[in-house]
Image (cartoon, rainbow over all chains, first blue to last red; front, side, top):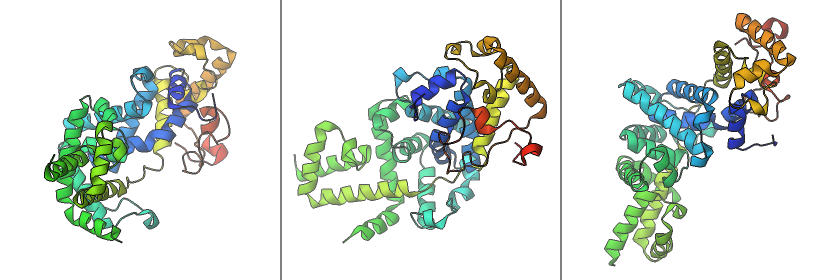
Length: 191
Length: 168
């Protein structure tokens, strides 16, 4: 295997039972899965649980990934998103409510790593958490993970037009909810 | 198209596709960028959309539990053990490319080396003690950088009493 094998090569190695490849995938993509789960479920513990479910599925059923149907990162996002939606549906109905304190808490232990004031960050998190489930997922996939709308459509098993509609409604709502923060941000950018 | 209608179209584009022109439909990109250069209200809308993107990207995901990766690797090993397979931390060194479709069977038949691995696996089943080097997933060391090529070497299958390390 090359020094830095791509994800498809690693998945082929996982299918052969190579634990090193599994560890490399885990290291490379753990934060991607946790980002989706944290945004969707609002709890760091739940995010860790989802990450465990998702990666154990990779280990036990690597053959469910088909590279011909899109890149690994998009497939992984889909698996993670489905795991989150399953949890929300099983619910755990009060999962987000129960996690409200965690949403509002400062997630960054290192002050130097903070890129915005804690109060603003809390309002942004709360605004995203208040979005309907599918709008929230589309925002997470687009903004947190940088997926294109085409990829999001594949991940969410819908059309590009539907994704654009979800994102459009989500952004309009977020602009309303966060108008104070937006105004402050725009003012900061003025010359 | 009137200025107001074009402005409404631009607002809709920003809502649906975001503030990055590379995410806009190719057939609209040049036209809308030109409109944006000519129209101050369009520029204000673009600035607002960029500010929203910045806000949404600026919140950080809290860090994972420090032992999450190690727990996950241990659980993967447990699953193989429960399924009667050689633990992955051991079998990684023994797996052959041909073992793709029936890896448990091929592992069992592969070699005497594999038999030794199985004995280690059985011992692990009773001892349930793995040591994860403190450098693994500490954020500073990548798997590729770590010594050894297999999880056997990465994790180190030794007793905590022998090494004084963290018992999982």
